[in-house]
Image (cartoon, rainbow, N blue to C red; front, top):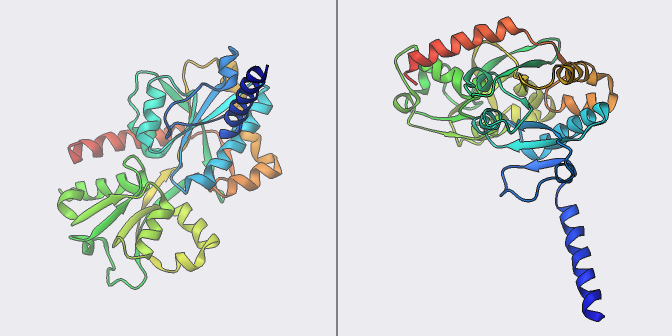
Length: 306
């Protein structure tokens, strides 16, 4: 009898530990794969929403989880959040049919070539605009004043498929027949715009390319750090990173998702949280702007020989 009771207690302890290990409805694919969420085990297929953060992941993950929870409540259907570290991994999720919706980036959307077709669902708007610039920054006390002076220096990129954090700089170099390997002495990836700014402020890199909207957010939230860097060049505008969806998702579900995304800023708590990831609201995507950018991306990619 004692043995039976001990086994029951051990089983309950294991179940309690498993339940507390992760927030409900969250899958962290940066960790080894474990048991499927309970909603999948019961045969109900959840809506899979993926993201790759280019800001500090711990804080931004909470906001994305709030968005996913809100969508689940509005749809009255389970939804799970899937996290990836890079945009390349995010594109792989979409290409393999392992995500239904994704918070993409301008560069990642332009680069997507998966066999599973995707389409635009929404785009982010902040401070009345749905476009941003690439700011090339250096340390405030640096003697660097223009991009040409970065030859032979150390550069901090964010993500290989981030437009403002990498591609814009690569394309700028390609127009002059250069590459990061030939132009810079060394470069590295920070996987976060805030980390790139920090790297420059602390002289780990001579310069970096960051999203203008994130720079302005940090100037408001961490002015002491922001004052440690200055902008030496602002590159042309690009459309904000879009929300994309699998094209073969049920049309009625896509329409429901559009309505949810376009109105979620009306929820005061969610609107406040979204501002911390530089989003005021979601609006219908400017398809022509993205298509034009995709064509520019492919042309500049050929120019870069990649």
